[in-house]
Image (cartoon, rainbow over the protein chains, first blue to last red):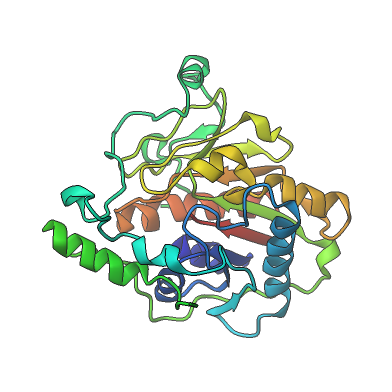
Length: 142
Length: 162
């Protein structure tokens, strides 16, 4: 996403990235970021915690307003849990977890992966809001 | 005990090595990015949203999981109940229970309705991250999304990876 933020910024639009992966955001040299020290998949706040979600967005917007130089990462004051023990298991083998070395990813299947069977049945094959730039050659200016 | 941020680059290296996979090369940029300035107050900003958590609306085609560089346009006033999430690499539990955690649509609508920001772009953009081909992101997806944000007259874009 850092790469995309850089391209958007190059076109004159200010960006802020929400990150829960400090090292990746740092390495990608994103123009601006806010960092939330949570397990991946909750980059914009805790589920159901509307007030926290609003504060995260307010902090992101304030970072756009206040950041003075490219690459700034603002750390947000929230913790996922009372302890940081959850970090021990991230991408690491679970006790008795077999030989996958904590690899929780599912197979990277090349067909659409619907959340529900109902979604698959309701999907519009002509979907006008589904954009496939690779297929359509809709690439601007290249 | 407080621990430092999880170093995902280092953990990927350890895990791939243990699995016998070749080293994964994360993007590493040394050149500073462009840095756009906005000369109007926040309450006049038009804000855009780009999220990589694999969000789609029921009725749209879902993402596939192998370097999918397609994206979805999502009307910013879409009811959250119609949002779905698909991804091969992160724990989807919370995103499915409350899509705002990776796609803060209701959150931004609230800030718009309260006048903290001026407006939201008419549509938000979503794709499925975990695209291993840096070339495809750089050459296809990034310019396509940037172009859309420009034509949506966005002042500020909020980028939400997972």
